[in-house]
Length: 197
Image (tube, rainbow, N blue to C red):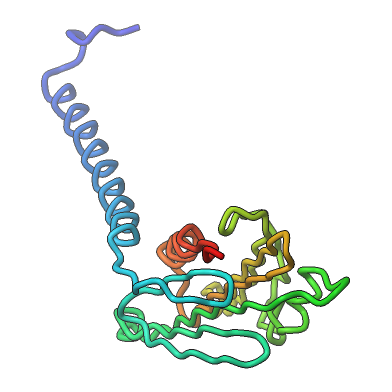
C-alpha cells in the first residue's frame, strides 16, 4: 500500500478537498433533516379539545370545525403554510362507543375510514401497530400515485379502550407528501390522552 509521502502534494490536497466537501454535504443533509424534525416538535398546538372520552390537540393555525352527531367528530383543515403551497391537509377525529360485538375494523368501515374510493395506482390499505392514549391500536395508510408523484395520501389510526370507546384519527393530504406530514401525524397521536372520569 502506498504511503502518503508517495503522492504528489497536489493529489494530497485534492483528496483532502474531496473529503471536506463530503463532510460538508453530510452536515448539510443532517441540518435539513433536523430542521424538519424541529419544526414538528416546535409546532404550536391548540389547548386540549374534548373528543368524547379522549383529549386531542390540533395545530394552532388549522381551522377547527366541531360536529356533534352520533359519532363525535372534530375536523381541522390546515390554514397555514401547506395551504399557501397549494396543498390540502385535513385532520379528523372520530369518537364513538362500539356497539355489542362491533370490532374496530367494523367501526372504521362504518365511518368509511378505510378508504374513500379508488385512487390512481392505488396501493391499497397497509396496516401497522400503534399506541394511542395508552391503548394498542392500528394505523392504516394508503396513497395514490400519479406519474411518480404522490397526489393523495390517507392515514387513519384507531384504538379502542377496554370500556368500548373507539377513537379514529385521520389525516388526508392532497398534494406532495412530505416526511413532515408523517411526523405531524405521529406527534398528534402521541399527544392524545384519555379524559379523567
